[in-house]
Length: 203
Image 1 (cartoon, rainbow, N blue to C red):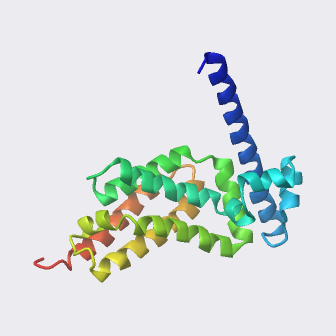
Image 2 (cartoon, rainbow, N blue to C red):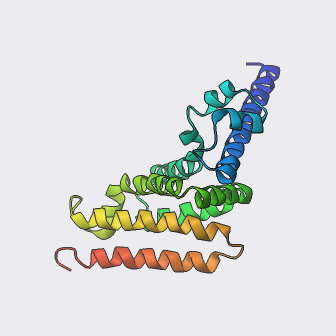
């Protein structure tokens, strides 16, 4: 591939990324302003300055637009666990949260918050994405609790961590000075895992 071809490909990819982001943000803004059910694909297309077919090429449904941010957040959690095999469960969660706070665009977070406030059901769906990401890290969580992999407390702790993380994103990422809150939040997660570890056989 020549340099000119690479440059052309890179330009196309950047253009596609910008178009996708424009569609997503237009959709989230409209969901906040006129409700999820009251917004059509045609509305989103008009707001983003594209054809309805273009919206569908990037997002097969409105649901995909609404859940795109929590989907990406959950995918990054899974990726951090994949890229750091052998690391402690809470160490990985800590690193992931720090990365999210640094990486997320405040404007996008504001849109997400407004969309959730106008459509509480979407918040529940978004939370479930993060909870599911925590669930599939089961082996790492079991290692942290020191309980057998099939011990029911692992499922309980996993669900609690997932719910806590969802609430964390609803609050901490909107704060300008969140370092203290982050430390307190991680201390709470450590206490939760430590409590489960206290029920391990032989302890």
